[in-house]
Length: 443
Image 1 (tube, one colour):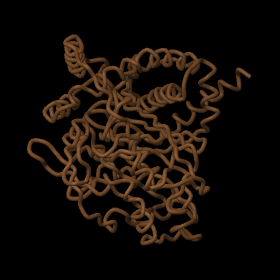
Image 2 (cartoon, rainbow, N blue to C red):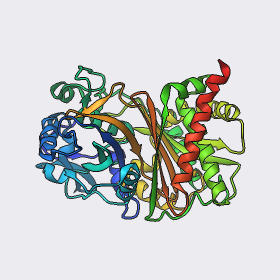
Image 3 (cartoon, rainbow, N blue to C red):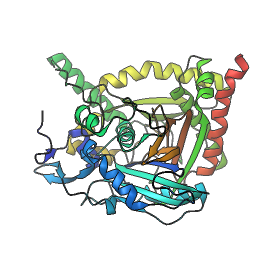
């Protein structure tokens, strides 16, 4: 095991590839936006005690050492290097916004704002004006530090249950967290020895060639959903009750993730129709699936490609077809592991060139399990929260979801010149409600 915190620590291949994939026009960062109620550093009038919040964040730093490291070149690779952490640069109050639309607009700008490489790759922003007596919060973290699952776990270490209850599953003490979690904030798991036979190596090589060739396969006709991604972005938040959605999906043997995919494809069809654009027979999407082994890496996901069917007006039929697709593809995605081209710096550079011209997928969709209990930031209850993932290559539309406090909270991110975030939001809300309504019809 690598010696921790005595000096530099080499980035894993998966984490290093995310540094290589960062580009001035496509910032490779994961963002979570939320709304804080009065409590702790948030006054009853919506004022913010920034110094008090910085002190609270400093108190949990021992459990999240990665937040006090920056990325530096190290020979032919990269390394994490411990640095003194200036919380004045990482925990900041920004200009007031005009309600939730203002928070959405701020997030859209942040998705094209690079994180400075001369310091740790994260920031926590306090945003006044999102609602009366409420303050917005934005946690932004580079993908090299964490994928969606790891980012949620890091946030859970920074926050605590709003009730003050002890909940080791979602919010361990700093001392326990430091002892039981990796540098990413995720549970440490002992590495499992893998005996790689010649047959296994040949199968891995064949899988790599297959998936690399597939990047250039024209799976869809030309569509406005693919093309150069511009700097003007659109962001839209959507909430739907989780229990009702789960019940609706269960009527056809589907999962909440299947329900999200069914709603996303319906919303994408509506967005294309609003522009007068043709709808392809299928809309293939890339869906990350968590891998069993993570070790010290911030990224441990496989890629599940799902060809979402279009033109199906009956939501139950569409949902049933999608559930069948994901059941057969999820295990295969996990068995293949991370995408082969992202396992080396050279491969990641080649991958970034190829994906700007690919026609294999048209959307990114991710669904991350959230904390089971309401959380609070230094005593300020976190009332609402939405995840926001990057769009990259030539894919102009993505959707991310997080379950939190009994609600599935979704965020769409798009190239605003290609897709209307407002149209997509309204259609996504309607499609999610249609899935939930299936439970009413079966009662």
